[in-house]
Length: 434
Image (cartoon, rainbow, N blue to C red; front, side, top):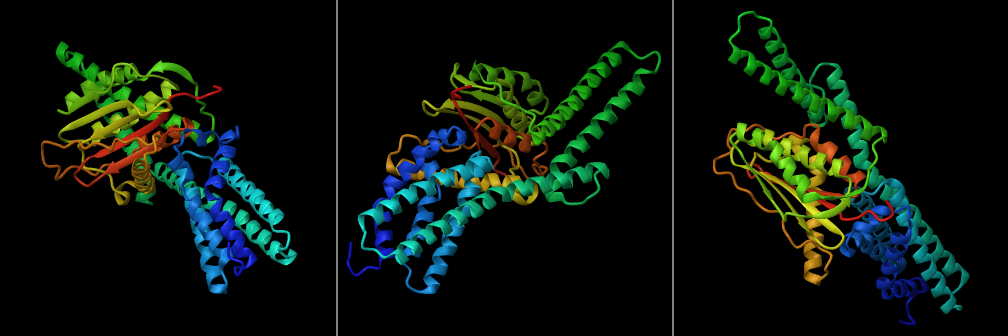
């Protein structure tokens, strides 16, 4: 350490030398915290996230000589903290977990600064006061910016749900297409289903109908009421999730058998649309989790894919990633999703997926065993998708996102215009203590 360096620059050099130890200590403290459950399912690369950037900015601030350098370092520090909060939202944290995790990092830095002061008793009280003031500012900025980044998309979701409710009450009046697609689409489907039920019911009141006509009408009536029931169940589940009344019920189950059964149940729907529905994965996949919510997550993604895919098919896959995680993939050859067409949630998932894939690539380059080495696969349609209707979220995707949060699962998406859409959910294989 150069004797010509200022005391704060010496502290910055000391923290840089201790960087690896600081991050390890922070990770250990966070994962020991019983109230930060989401951290336990992340790989080392995913967990580190934007914190190295925060530490870089903090060290640059300590070394800064000119006011402009301090201002630039503070801006970088705040931006990294905000990105950290946003990433944690995408990884399934709640706000309390984000704050407690940031507090663990601050405590680690407090211990390091105290150790530095003890080893350098000649440093003046003024210099140490400046060091503590800078660390205090980091703690305040970190909590404020990180939580604000985390909360930004939650506010967007809340605003979207409010707009959707207004659209439903005003019978699908155009208010805000970006935030109202999910509820407007549900209302449209319900109106169409009720129209079919009403028409068939009127027909069945006629006398002298041929037996075949009666049989076919009853079958149509059954399908129509089943579709309406599914929409109402989605609305009810969304309301329970919003109210915080939905809880996970953990048990051991064979995920492969559950998914095979679901695909078999939906084969008639796929055949009615001349689509191929494939199920690919090992015959047994013993895990712990909430089988009802796992099935519901896959079912919502599958129904959305079958609804909007015009040609080609849908593929459901599952695999073990490592001792701690397994993944479910739902892939279609439909028209693809766009942030512009499908709302802010799709855009946020797309952004989250890009960052997750970048971290997986970094993990592969460094030889880290935690990363899932498999890229999201590609399923091509046999026919041109020109003229296919735009792929919407419906209620399915927001519900899947909320179920993933409840299950400590990670939801990713890859989509391209005319190139289909792939969703991948990474689930924990166990929930210790539950």
